[in-house]
Amino acid sequence: MKLQQSIIIDRPMAEVFAYRSALHQTGEWQRNVVATALLAAEPIALGSRGTEQRLGQREEVSEWELEVTEFEPNSILGIMSRCGDMRVEERVVLAPDEKNTRYTVCMEMTGSPLPTAAFHRQTIAALVSFKRRLEGR
Image (cartoon, rainbow, N blue to C red; front, side, top):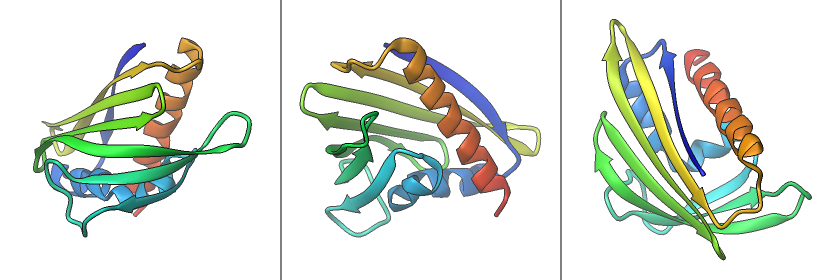
């Protein structure tokens, strides 16, 4: 399954990138993330690794491995997540949009029983939550 979605965030690119790349804060805006632990102290960089505990559809907790696969400060963040046969590749691209930031996420998920429509709904809900959380700071 693949998905690309953009949203405009009323914050400078540096602030948006800093919040998205603060992986330990993902649970603030992504509902199914229970906890995140990095293997090295932040700030993250290319090759940074960690784990994330996520709550599944049946309320079970699964552990995901994370790896930062792309990292261009204030511009691009790529994260690959794995749990068993499931894999999610996420690429976030930031661009100026007048005084705001255009946040575009491209995601590809493989090995998951999650229906495409549910994957799209979850992704869009996380984007809206991310925007609201960041703009409300």
